[in-house]
Image (cartoon, rainbow, N blue to C red; front, side):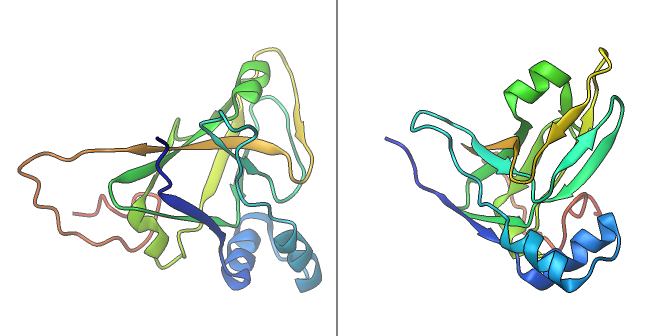
Length: 172
């Protein structure tokens, strides 16, 4: 039996606009709206796929050693006790050594309720040692997410609340 435990959503246009411009610079509202309207929710390619493909909102090109931090425009709502792990798409990793800068992205269930709407960013680097350039069109799949259950220790008493992402839970 397959568990149906999550749902992908777009972040608000205001959130996406702010985050996109912080990464790529100021754009006119019409261009931003076009990018936002073109965002595709993650989807599985086949009924047997474990991973949900994440698509780039805009075309990009990465030469060897270059990185890009992509605001996906996506957030995910999921049941407690589950985590979404993000990996590079297998083919891109195999052909170009496209790597996630944090190795594996970990999206916790409470990230959805964060001040930034749980907006997921995916930072990838072309780690090619063969001088290959990665080029992806707008809407090209570049990462994949897999939902996994997790457990906690029997004596766990954590009651902390999230307010942010990227290291927000290590300020103890």
